[in-house]
Amino acid sequence: MPGIARRFSRLEALKVEHDLFADNAFDDIRRFIENELDADGRLGDIKEFIEDRMGVLLDNSGGLFIYIEVIIKFIAAHGDTKLDVANEILGSKSHAKAETALDGLYRTVIKAAAEETNSWQTAKMISSFVLATSNTSPLDARALHAFLPPPFNIAFKTFEEILKRMSAIFIIGADGVVVIHTSVLDFLGDETRCGKDIFVPLDEVEGSMATGCFEIMKHGTRNAGRQMNRSPSGLRFNICDLETSYLPNNEVLDLDKRITANISAELRYSCLHWLDHLRSSLGTSQSSSDEEEAMIALTDFLESKRSLFWLEVLSLAGNLAAGRDILLGVLRQSSSPKFSQFTLIVSQLRTHVEQCFNAISTSTPHLYLSLTWIATESKLWDVWQADFPKAQILKDPIRRSSRLLLSISCPPRVDTFTLSPNGKHVASGSRDGCVTIWDLVSGALVGRTQVITPPNAFDGNKCSDNGKQRHQH
Image (tube, rainbow, N blue to C red):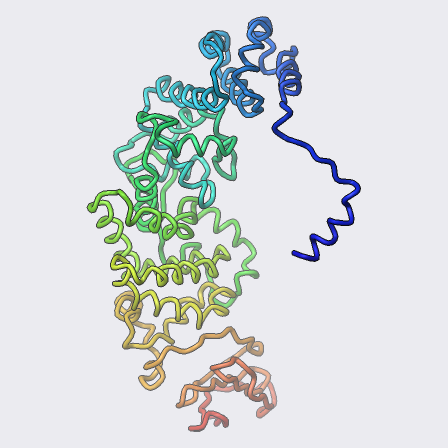
């Protein structure tokens, strides 16, 4: 910082003081409005009406471009009824404060969308979801629709129509729905500004989002009866239907297409942000029953095979590091009675991810190969063994402590391999007649030697007790 300050001091002669609050943007706003009144502008067909009320527009804007942009978008969106809408908004007298005018405009947009579609509750829910996801990452329209709780039995087409009618304050894009200006977030988050008929307490919204994340991970949707125009899918084994476990993720040629086809935006979002919403909802003003529902959902998630499928999705999407951070986040909440019950299983899950991170992030199917390294006395094994009983392939002395799983680059055409009795080394025999031994802790190559002249192949290997020698039979 001192170095930066010294360098800026050399520019002292170029510095000019300017009071941003002494100026206003009224001239620029006027020119902006005039452009919109041109024949090809958004308000060209009601030019005379707008020109007559230019003073009201400028006064209400208070010099804020966002006010003018929202009002023009709102009026223009009403097509043949532009004049009626403009008359309703601009027929009133000027407001004392620009913020008051802006709040009134935001209310008008939401109220019009709600009343025109007879969907007050849905309009409120959409607004609250956009507010909640502004702290995480935006969701597109279809994903927002998937998060609607069960009482909202509306088709996506209806939902989309309500959302479009609020396009004056929301930017609706393929990458997500976001507010047109941060002042919309301030408005939605303050009951004194938006009013009781629009306001939804943020902790309630966060609770709904948290429960929605767990339901979407379990079922793919919060309401199977809702018209989704597609078959929702929650977390499941081999979600992208990979045909082989021999390829690293970056060599699966159509992996991106498989991810798009099988992992919805709402499922991916749920995998990444369930903890964000859960933390924001607990310990606030929401009811004890809502808290209990959220904690039951968390228990069901962690103590089932879905926690394993969750890691699969994160690995496929290249977000395994985020999963590691989420588990750490849960552990950091362990001082809270609500989270302390999960300390054991989450700490074991995080340790397993750390030990196998390289292998699982390189090739997602290695997640299931890593089950052979889980200690049989662990909570994880209690949770997963019923669904993956064949994972118990290693001898007891090896399985009693979880090991580090590594991706090791093997020679081509490996015919056979074996583990040393002490569990510290692995040896492979390949078609080229070579035996290769690796250290299982570090993944380092211990040695490689030619013992048979091709084309003879190995039909089996056996390691010596110290794991350093190989016997062929």
